[in-house]
Image (cartoon, rainbow, N blue to C red; front, side, top):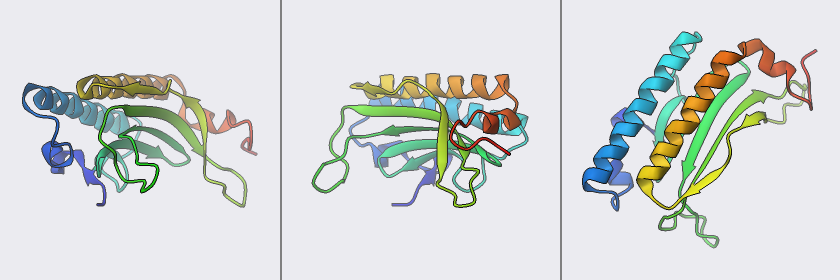
Length: 162
């Protein structure tokens, strides 16, 4: 299933075990996250609505990303995977990872390099996982505003800008 922008998706369709007040609280947290990411992108001259950016429902996972040229701010909230099929296994836990990454500066691009990472965390409760994602997003935004975009490239110890 291809990723769907959060505002076009249905949390219940992707996470049917989350219902009632919990679903409403998670949806509210995700709306706040989507709004914050959109404002962050706009403040720094980016576009959270470009393909692959913003908050998306990717199958049973949530992913968010904002790209600025060679710098990316992103987070993933993933459900466990079955080791045999790599298909989604019933949660918990939900695993959270967030990072600020830069594109490789070498001619043979090896991908993205993590410059700073939010502490990885696992959550047993879906609402705690959504609130953890909200905290990670606030960290991404704070760090993104504290450091000029052009300085992130300079911090890549593997391939500093030339």
